Amino acid sequence: MYEIEQERSSWLGSVLARWRSYRQIHRILLIFSVVFTIFVLDRYRIELAGTFTVPEPPINETLTVDPFLDQRDDSMAQAGNSTLGFHAIYYINMKARYDREDAMALQSYISGVDLTDYPAVEADQIDPVGMPPTHRPMMLKVGEKGCWRAHANIWSEMVRKKLPPVLIMESDATWDINVRPIMSDLNKHFVEFLKNINSTPVHDPSYGSKYNKHNAAKAHFRRDEFTNMTIPDEDLPPSPPPIEYRSDDPWLSEHWDLFSLGQCFEHPQDKDINLIYHDPRVPAGKDYWGEKLGNQRVIRRSGGITCTTAYAISHTGAAKLLLRSALDLDNPVDLLIRRLTLSRDLVAYSVMPPPIAQWEYRGDVGMGERGAQSDINGGKHKDTPEDAVMDGWPVVNNTNSVWETKRHHADVAFDKMALAVAWDEILPDGVLANSWWDPNTRD
Ligand SMILES: *[C@@H]1O[C@H](CO)[C@@H](O)[C@H](O)[C@H]1NC(C)=O
Ligand SMILES: *[C@@H]1O[C@H](CO)[C@@H](O)[C@H](O)[C@H]1NC(C)=O
Ligand SMILES: *[C@@H]1O[C@H](CO)[C@@H](O)[C@H](O)[C@H]1NC(C)=O
Ligand SMILES: *[C@@H]1O[C@H](CO)[C@@H](O)[C@H](O)[C@H]1NC(C)=O
Image (cartoon, rainbow, N blue to C red):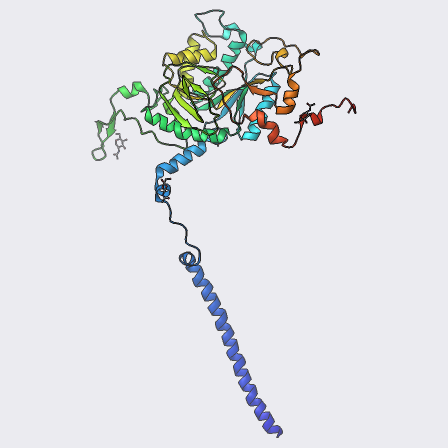
């Protein structure tokens, strides 16, 4: 009995052992097949992906394949970058104007614009001996000489280093808080405008330039690839390159000397060479030489600007202005630009309403008394007297702004002037008067 039991149990034991070893094999097989499946799935993951995910909507061929549109997007993105598509933004400020420096800092902070300080030329740095000749002696005030020199220092640097185009701003500049998208949008239409007017690159006198008219007039040769001999090239001088969107130079600076983005007035000459486009950030109602504008901006061939609040300049423009003023400094800087545009020696374009404008202090907050509204007259300044008219302050409490655009600059139209909305951006729940001194609690 015991034996039988033992036999039976040994038989059972061997069945069990076999079964265990099968289980072992099953386990090994299971592990192997899992590893294999993972391997296969990984191999064909990309091919399989489509079968497991919801299919994407059909791709719009016109949007994805057209390289022109890709280039346009890149160009527009660069035109709306923190230097607005220029190599740099230089801004000129007098040493004493900390107030303007602060206004600049606040605006660039909330609108994402990067500025590079460029020191102004102060009255005590002007010595007649270092000023160019002029056929109209005593025309320029010392403040105007300093102002011209500050601009001329930038032109000179551009010419010496052959810099890509820069945007020059004076320190009382203001702009819409959405200036970057505004410039992006402007870029799209500006390139269209240059195409429409069949623009060609301006004469570029810099050494070795391909757009140098004098070089182009000479015979051109190329090397034959088989004989390695020089033969005259029928195709040269090169036909102007097609006007295309470019991200390395979104404003196509070969095509202009000056591009004004902040003039306060402009002459009507060439006003009909223009392109008017829809821009929802322009309040409707401006007047373009008798034409009522809606939410629209005008890109135009400049007739000659007044005010150098903000203008882009190329090295060709810098060379022209530096030469013209080195030869005869007969006008303040903005009129020099204006006259050289009127004579059509300067290839200049502008935008109206300008994306950048001048600010001044609102009335009756005590700043007029200090002579803070302009730097051109220079000289000593007095502080606000204690009995000054202060009627502006309740308005400041209601509007949260001491700044407004210059009252008589009729072409200016902002949707959201950056300085005017700075308080709402930085202290959205703040009420100015809540932090005023309280005569009741004397605290
Ligand atoms: C594709 O995009 C173009 C350009 O934006 C547009 O005109 C066209 O209607 C679109 N086509 C489809 C099928 O969505
Ligand atoms: C903005 O774009 C211009 C043109 O491509 C470029 O030269 C400039 O460096 C860019 N600015 C910044 C801050 O990258
Ligand atoms: C072609 O000629 C130029 C000038 O003589 C020489 O410098 C160059 O090496 C030549 N190229 C070939 C491929 O022979
Ligand atoms: C300031 O403006 C707030 C509303 O923005 C108003 O409640 C308050 O009375 C004003 N204070 C003064 C002193 O004008």
